[in-house]
Length: 514
Image (cartoon, rainbow, N blue to C red; front, side, top):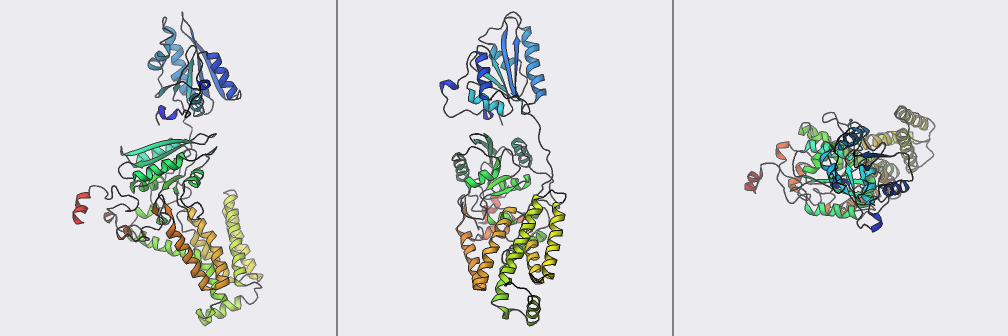
């Protein structure tokens, strides 16, 4: 990000916001505004031999790089300018900027708002007595969490790098994947108090101009005091705010975000979080993994079929058990019916209560395992599940087949590459079980129809959530339920991108076929 983009100024400056010509007044305003905080470093220097001038170098300890300030700012000022005997006061400010500062990015400021935004972002400000303006130098600290392996989207084959909490590191990781001058970045500052940097990335000529404009418009409409994570942004910009289904995709993998950008989507990066948002988001995006594109297409297609089967079982397995054992016993083979009946003979609860008890118990154990320290969390959740399940069966509280159903549901819920959709399925299981207890299979089918109709009504930045299934787009089925060979994936999603449909240098070849 260039220095001109780093210096944020308020929309309308008042006279009181202007810097003073007196250095002492400027320093006093800075100290009073920041509450005389002890991490504010103000180094006053006198330069020049015969005609001395007072200079203040202002930075924040911990945000600015001390070595850069010492070597490239203070040392250069004290070593070089003292040799100059006759520098006029009207030219010294420009003289310092052009001749002696060796940092890469330098800019002028004239307002206190820009000054505070600069130093609070880790930059260093140089103020000169007699000038109602200052010089900003780029001295942000390079402290950053190392690029590590993704913790939520692990793969067997593929890159082992994930985003960090630093915005510039994240944009650099994407630029390493897409070395194109058409990869554009636009920035916004959101949060009246936190002043959080938010950047959107898209490939000019591929991404829809309407989607880009809509993303920027929704970001500009956000009015909040602070942004601490990308989830704040997601809540403000998503289309269906009352829907449990996520309409904004997120990932911590640079290769996933690069692939989404190549499809014509827009990425939203928030400083301070390793999770990057992507819009528009489609239902199929939450069931696709980065590894699908790194292995043989037949294997990837089989895995995708298993995922769709898994989402079906995770959603309806408990409700089907409740409906069949309560209303439709004739659907079961006689031997199985006798076995289930014998297991439930000592259970004092109806099937729906039995299912609710086990599902709630498992959800509690899963949440406990997530919140506990990593060294003991998995062990406690596994041991707790085994002990409680076995003890519940031995005590006659639940039947053994119910434990099997809950275990199968839990395993299927772990098939989702995207955690957000998994949470939605976990919640929807409970109303489906209630419908199954009230109306049997008719209630289950009614609940599924309501869910499908709801999904058909959702849009993400103007794109139907269930595309390419609804509406049905034959050309996009190559990368939906199944995955075709890479050589067959010559076009981008139709509804996501209307500008540059064809990938690579195959434009003339494909157009001639049409």
